[in-house]
Image 1 (cartoon, rainbow, N blue to C red):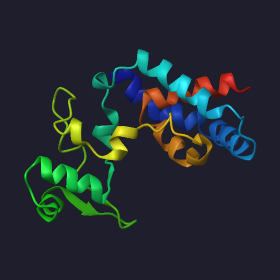
Image 2 (tube, helix red, strand yellow; image 1 turned 180 degrees about the vertical axis):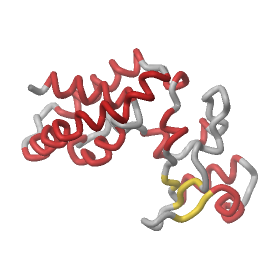
Image 3 (tube, rainbow, N blue to C red; image 1 turned 90 degrees about the horizontal axis):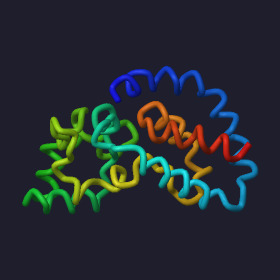
Image 4 (cartoon, helix red, strand yellow; image 1 turned 45 degrees about the vertical axis):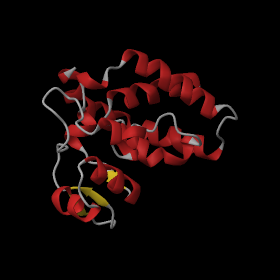
Length: 163
């Protein structure tokens, strides 16, 4: 798995222009059944992919924390939201709450998440390949294929399926 993760940024970079053109076409004229196709490709990929063997998303990026995320996770830790923010979060250049440090504070050495049941919405939905109106998040997907082997595989499968 580590070889795949190590090679992913280069693979994603090599495919970037191809993927960008593909997503531009997809945005202009998405197939009527795109959401269904994406759901199917997502499910097929995650039958093969074990996130616990990878956790590259948790090791290299941090999620955005919504107010609801902050309240839920603070409650889990029996902290006031303000205390949780001071201890774990910072405000980024887009004025969003993000982790103070990466890799994720809540990621264990075994790749398990210590707050899995209350994790942020962004973590629950990552890599966002089963979202409705998938074509609207192409910029996010272009970033995610360099982080997540499953997202990379899903996009490659999608390009084959929608030729």
